[in-house]
Amino acid sequence: MQMSLLPHKPHIFLLCIFTISLLVQSRLTLHPSDHNTHLHINKDFHVQRALEKDNETDITPKRYIFAENSQGRNESYRKKVVDWILEFLAGMLSGSGSGLIFSLLIKLIMFVIRGRKKSPSWKIYSTVIKKPEDLAFLEKENGLASLNIIGRGGGGEVYKAVLSNGKEIAVKKINHYLRDSEELGEEDSKFLNKKMRQIKSEIQTVGKIKHRNLLPLLAHLSRPSYHYLVYEYIKNGSLQDYLQYVKEGERELDWLARYKIALGVVAGLEYLHMNHTPCIIHRDLTPANILLDDEMEARLADFGLARAIPDANSHITSSNVAGTVGYIAPEYYQTFKFTDKCDIYSFGVVLGVLVSGKLPSDDFFQDTNEMILVDWMRNLMASEDPRRAIDPKMLGNGHDEQMLLVLKVACFCTAENPKERPNSRDARTLLSQIKH
Ligand SMILES: Nc1ncnc2c1ncn2[C@@H]1O[C@H](COP(=O)(O)OP(=O)(O)OP(=O)(O)O)[C@@H](O)[C@H]1O
Ligand SMILES: [Mg+2]
Image 1 (tube, helix red, strand yellow):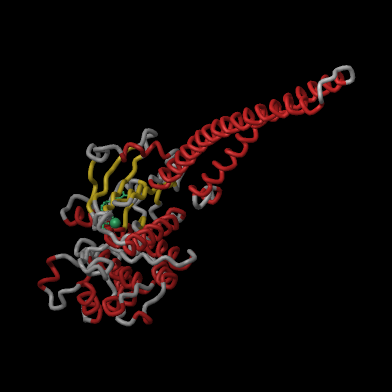
Image 2 (tube, rainbow, N blue to C red):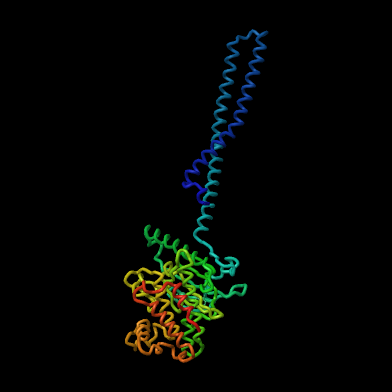
C-alpha cells in the first residue's frame, strides 16, 4: 500500500520534478526582468513624450530624434537578453539543486521502506507477550548462549527463557541451511520467497489456534536463515521423556493419568481435523510432540508446521518423507500424501505406547518376531492372552478391561486400510465411552 504511492520509475518521476522546478524557477527569476522591461518602456515613453513636447518649439528634425531613441532601445534590449541568460542560468542551478535534494529524499524514503521490509519484526499471537521488545534479547549476539537447552529436535534446539514479567517460555530456533544468496539463481530466489511466504502464512494460521489441548504459539520471528518460535513453557515436558522417567523409576504414571492424556490428544486432534477450516493435519503426532502441563493435561505441539518447516519435524533423512519412524502410516510410503487418517494411524501407535509403556524405538522390539510395535500389538490382541500387551507396571491394578478396550481402539486406528480407520471424532467417542 505504501509502495503504491511511490512512482514505479523514480528516475522518470525525478526528471519531471526537475523540469517543473526549472520552469517554476525560470518563471520566478524572469519576473524582475519583466519589471525592468516595464521600467525601460516607461523611460523611453517619457523621453519620447518630452522630445515631442520640445518639438513644438524646437527646430531639430524628427528623424534625428528617432535615430537617437532607437539606439537607446538596442542597448536596453541587449541588456535584457544578458539579464535573461543570467537569470536562466541561476534558475537552472537552483532547479538542479532542488532536484538533487528531492532525489536524495526519495532515496531515503525508499531505504527506510526497504529496510523495514528486510528486517520484519516479531509476530505476537498472545497477550502473554506484551511487546516485541520483550523478546529482543533473543536476537542479540549470544542471546541464546545464557539459556538452558530443554530439548533437541529435527530442526534445532529448544531453549527455556524467563520474561521480565516472570512468565516462562520455550524458544525453538529452526535453522535453514541455505546456500549463499549469490549462488541462488532467479528461479531459486523466487521459489525461496514463495516458500517463505507459505511458511509465514502457515505459522500465522497456527498462531491463531486456541484449544486447551493444543500448545499455543506465542510469537514468531522469521529471518532468511532461521525462525524463532516462542511457546508457553510446559513444565512436565514431553510424554516421551516422562515415560522414560517412569521406566527408570523416577516418576509414576498410572492408568487414569494415561487415559486422561489419550482423551486430551484425541480432543486436540478432533479440533484440528474437524473444527478448524481448513482442516489441519498434524503430520508428526508422537509422544515427543505431546507435552504435559501442570495438571498432566496433554498439549499437542508442532501441529500444522510439518509441511511448512519439514526439517523441523522429520527424523527421516529422505527429503520427501515427513514424520517419525514407527508412527508413519504405511500408505504414506507409497503415496507421500498425508491425510487425517495418517494422523489417526499415529494416534493408534500413541495409544499402544500408553498401554504397553513401550516406545516403537525400544530395543525390546528387536527381540520380537514382528520387530515393530504396531504388528506386535495387533498380533497379541488377536492371540489368546492379549494382557501380555499391557505395561507390567499397570497390570492387575483394576483397569485391565479398560486397557484392553483402549488397545482395541488402537488396533482399529492402525488398520492397514486407511478407510477402515475411524475419524478423530469417532475415535474420541469410542475412547470416551470406556467406563472407569
Ligand atoms: N513448549 C515446551 N515446553 C517444554 N518443553 C518443550 C517445549 N517444546 C519442546 N520441548 C522439549 O524439547 C524437546 C524437543 O522439541 P522439538 O519439537 O524440537 O523436537 P521433538 O518434539 O523431539 O521432535 P520433532 O522435531 O519431531 O518435533 C521436546 O521433546 C520437549 O522435551
Ligand atoms: Mg516437537
